[in-house]
Length: 133
Image (cartoon, one colour):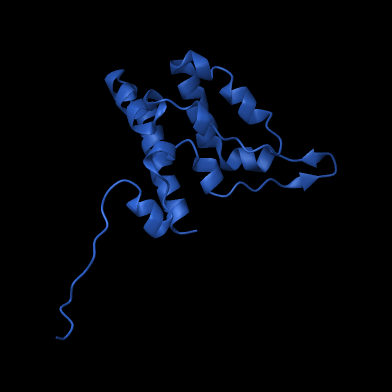
């Protein structure tokens, strides 16, 4: 019969995650630091978070932003700063209103252009970082 040149396209939720290990939408910003490789250097006193915190400064700024919007996340910036080697992972605590697309829409409605820009930047960095890893 010969080669018909047919292609199979996989569309829908999770397709990009399965095909290229790109982050799922639900976790696209929240798992930014984890999927982008969280390397924490050690010194003689334990984990040295200065370099790592600098690498993820945009994520820390995002945590401050959502803490200012959602009272239940008020402690996130402090948790981030004091986490040590503990993986910072919030999947179990996220509701739909905390998903990046909902947060982005809310920021746009509030006229917070800088916050919306930050979220879009984190989305791009996360997809790019996870895709090329």
